[in-house]
Image 1 (cartoon, rainbow, N blue to C red):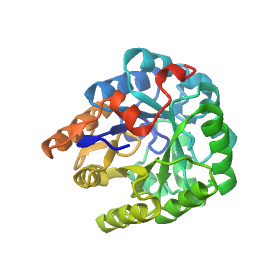
Image 2: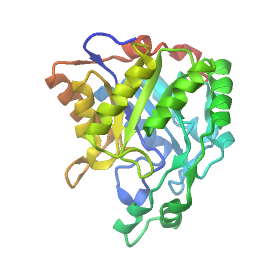
Image 3: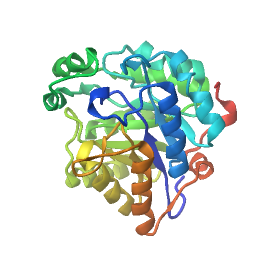
Image 4: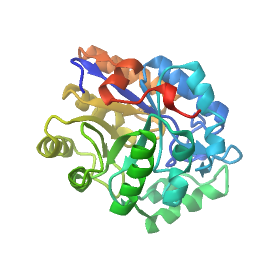
Length: 311
């Protein structure tokens, strides 16, 4: 559970939202992902949230073999907790989204707590030319996407990875209803408290990036889960740092990374994931908190340990 004055920094290294045209800093190849992940850990990230991409064109990839091109190097080079996505990309099936975690048995996985519109298409307006031919259609077609995370999907992921592999979940909650979905699942015995919530703001289709919503989500979590949860906050794009700062002031944990925002300040692209980690670390420490080490994060989150993964 929570340790007094300790804040976990998670870093989402690449994700599946942004495309290669948008930033030269976005890591695409296994070498780039490994390098940036290790640098982020050295800058203070206790948890690394990881997606894979096709090394040839940067397209999101569910292939466990691609994950295996960077996960062992990350594990050998730092002690950070590896958190593998089960969200993948909205274009993937649930089976594809689970494939890497099933094979590699990480300490943590993300788990989206409800189906939703997940719209990226406004981002396509910012670019006239593209590095790769898949990028524009991937973004523009997202006005037709529903990101499926049914109760049956959630149960399948829990039973396969939670019961089957001892995985702890980062419960990604994009709206207030997702908190109630999680509470329902706990009532059914699917997850064992304390749970780890990732409250997400600013994705088109989810709850908006208004600070009133942060306070409301936190109050709702208090009502539903009492003291049996830890929580973290991420926000998309320009809202990243101010939402994380407010979360830290409220005693929450924080998540940054190029999956969530490509910027380090207004109009200024980040040079790396580590640059964002270093910035939020400075803010957290200036507020009088300490960042949690990976060892402390494992204790706070109740993880099985790096010696029980398969990479």
